[in-house]
Image (cartoon, rainbow, N blue to C red; front, top):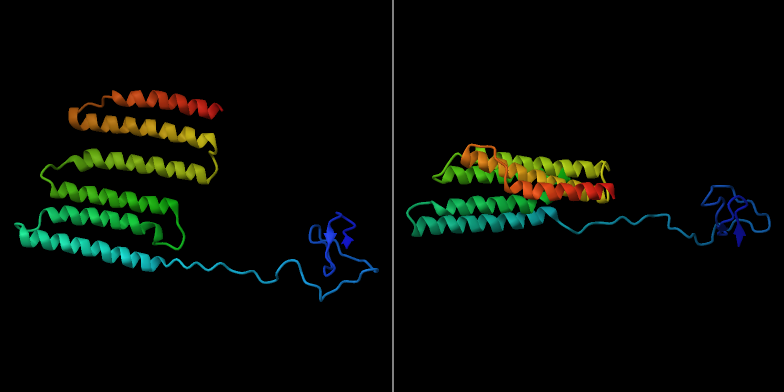
Length: 219
């Protein structure tokens, strides 16, 4: 067994240069044996995924479409037209989007995945408002709350992916985001119900969560 004159690593008999530092191997007493078995394979086996995304999407689509068709048929046959089945159809459509969204693209893009799910939720809530007798709550309640949630989630994902925050700073950002989100919910609900931007219960969440965020940041 030979050793590299530069770094001292053990050398196999069939190598003509050091695998660690790249120095040429020159040992007249032990010439290179090209026929000796190499330590590392020359051909890298490629991992072939057996998971079929398109098949999963087709199966989920057929199942959801079948359930929607059954509910509409039952509602049409035994009811006075189509009313409650529209709620079922819109709910199942939302579930369908949430189930297939991670598998639409070849690779999972977190931002795109979350955005698709949130947009689908907004569409679902708009349909529910359109079907219900009480209207006006989508723009005043659902839209600001859901968009704030989307903004906070995407901000966290961006900060983590860009490595601006890590370890306990992620916990700090999460607690602070929850506190801010509760304030937004509290303010939007009171503005809708009382026509006043009044904060009450959300402060009980914001203050301790902010304190936890500060402590974890300092740690």
